[in-house]
Image 1: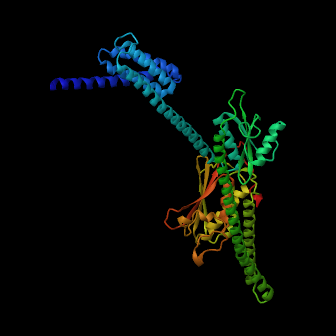
Image 2: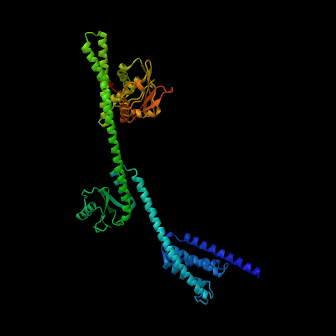
Image 3: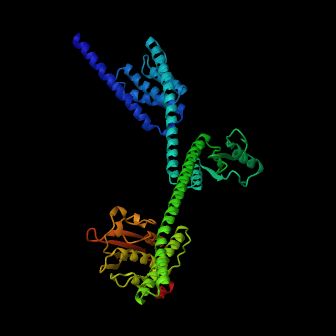
Length: 533
């Protein structure tokens, strides 16, 4: 008896396992056999799944108990209930029970029910269909909601990424319209609220109402719903713009979802607020820099103009009061001092004028073909009176390519750097000018033997009125020359960088990066650089 009972329980578990395997096989086969478009028709699925279940049940009926065959039909009911709704699931359960009763329940090939278990089976099938149909419907609704939310989040993220690169109000509005066009497949344009778009009177009234009341008007809205357009306001402190949406074609669905449009508009309004804040901060920064520049300029003028003027006044006063007592050499020395201070004052005033022109964008480049040798030669002539027993040595590649620049400005930039090198190079020191070509750039290096520039100050030395602190031994300077040189190079598309010399804590190297033209002229340039000065 024990052996028989164990044998029966073991066989029952095997058959139940086999029934479960065949049930899963039915589910997999159904999903693979039926195309998605078939599954989208609920009553078609309710009719075909019992037929397929009958075929599979007939194939395995000889291997399974009749009670386990019903699991195959139950799987068909579950699949139908999950992929459709309650009514097709009930239809599938009835068809499944009838086919199961007709083909497999005794008496076979009849619909007669002689056992109470058969009535319980049909009730169980119907109950499963009702319960799973309800659950499946809720699951489908949740899946559709999740899919819709995921799609909306994707569109929001895409718009946020596009808006992040917009730096102006016009760019934000253009980006918003382009995104609405792509996502909703409509025509979207934006107009200022006080404009008059080319519309018929009724549509124009809807546009003006949206602009005045800051509420959507037109198709799909509560007001002017008969209009073929949908007008949506974009707001900041007030209405900034009005979106006008229309169908691309007569067959296109219109109006689109106002919820999605409202979400996109809110993102654009946030981007507009950020742009306004950035512009405000930028304006505040410019005002602060302008105030700092004004203060620095007044401080510089009060010091750098007073020093040469004081020297000139003192020398002239001495000549006027003691010219009879002074020797010719002493008088000549005073006159030389007056001339040098006058030249220094003239250079400072010229630097101020150049910096003002650069700062206001009034500097226009009058480009011409010139060689770097011509610019260096003119700079050497101008620098010769400033040399105090220093030497300037020029080396470079030959032949150097032609430059298409404003010769006088490049010469002024080079002169300012050479003048700075002369100030910091000791007597009997050497200043080297080296030229080299690096792909499409000409490199012009000015190497001095001064005390060098600390690494943390190499970028700041190109700021206006900035000078490196050297104590009382520092030569006088205004902090304008290098700033002017950098501005001139940047106006030409190049720049100046500062590096340390090969010897530690000795000297600095200013490297001019001058872009070369893509094509060289056929004729040789006319040397007119000297005439600029």
